[in-house]
Image (cartoon, rainbow, N blue to C red):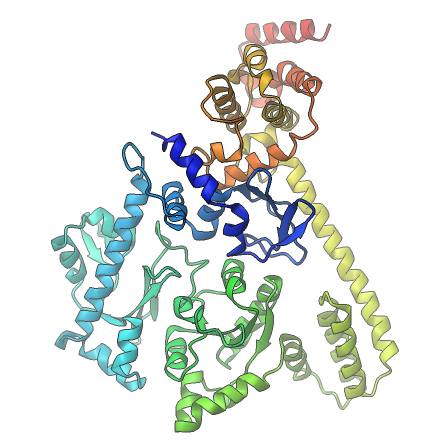
Length: 590
């Protein structure tokens, strides 16, 4: 059962989409609308639009779109009811509970409760005699008790059923434990602890919820770390360890990106509370976008070994694409941050801060790494280094930034600046052509609907599916056409199921007067996924300027071609039915 219309109208009136989106995205006015860098994909030119007239948003780059509820669902990774509750809390409203299908919301709440109870259990176990191995490990890492409490560190007991038994006694089912990923199912069907004999690191989201765990084994067994898999409340591709603390402790808009849990905790202990880590996975674009919501600059502080330096090289373009300034720090002596700080005692933190302030940006770091691979005392070495360096500079968007580094290279190697600039212009043109080819491929993919996940049937019925979308757009703009279209083009005439469902819903809302005003995008957020809402937003964009004649034209395409657009269906048809379809088609075209 849907939420009461009166409540939803009140919620919408109190949830200004510009105010909500502005708390996540830096918006600037462009005409009647607001624009900014999309928070759902990496981009350098703003393609994310907020339409103040109808309370919607749409990104021309990735196709994300919808109303304010959809935005909260996507940005906070919530289901519909949870997004409504969050907006209601912000607006000072109470959500009517009766008749609401909040099964997913209740499951997520149970998982969060299980995680919170598990964190308490692990922390309590650390302080018992059985947790002595964990306490000894943290003592070796020079962690005082107040830091152990601050991060809620714990110990998973040796027993494979300690946590399961504890949670069962608290009233949680084995199915819920498995969905929270604190337990796994054995071959016999029993639930068994996922973590055992490990020190435990709770992962806390930006709202203070325990959403996942990382567990480190203290022996040489593999794997060294086990992390929570994706659950109803956690997606590792967007999670960041200690971001809940760091977002409130930014140093001049700067984050320190370290490699692991202990690196981050040690940095916090030393006073660098803006340190975070990417949870043992390679940095993702989603994580970079989360950072960009809070910070302007990221200092990469990975280990100095080969794996750490490769990880830094991979992270640089991801962070840059999210609009962040990037610097890369190298800790002397191949030490990790904790080792370096402890090596200098009371001066360790001050020395580490100097390393941060003196570290170069990502371009300097990449050029420095390149330089190490060539003998610059020889002509060949200089040429090879310059060619590689020019390729690095060609990927920079800012012409002034490129010119600065060309000047430095010329001075450093005693080479004429104009010669480097000539080569750079050639490389920039090549990079531009490559980018245009990539854009052409992406556009071709989009037009062919080959990777359409919202309406996967569209790729086999391209012309008709496009006509269906245009007809829906016409109906949004001209509600008065609903009775005629329902008679002439009943929903069953639509070939693709997503368009059919959307068309049927829109007809119902108009004819049955299900909405107080003409149906708009927010009237579909309860029945569509966030990805589907992006498609609804795209269709709505096509509605302006449509006419009744357009509707007639699109209707004719659906009637004349819809039934025969699928080759598989034609081959499977009964010959008599197929002949009847051809006859009907012939009569329509007369």
